Image (cartoon, rainbow, N blue to C red):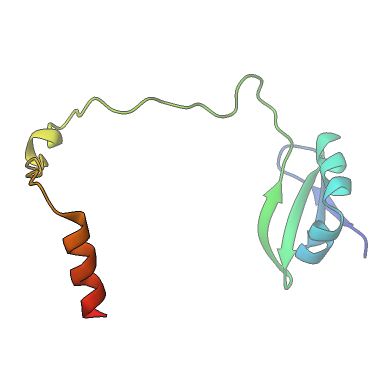
Length: 101
């Protein structure tokens, strides 16, 4: 199976199409085409489902943000009362559980 060339993409680079099985079998080859500036449209049963495009922006692609500081004040509404700590006899609980089985 080979990649089929079609017209140019909207960004000006060549556009190629390939089905999912081709992509799975030869991902490295398709990634080399994308690194060279080409766009690959992934087809599933003759319908486009995804597009592999070259990364154009510099810098970090993933930005990790810290947790929100409860801007809506929901922490006040969602407070859970503390759990009562009672002394328990672990052996007694275990034996009761075994008797039920």
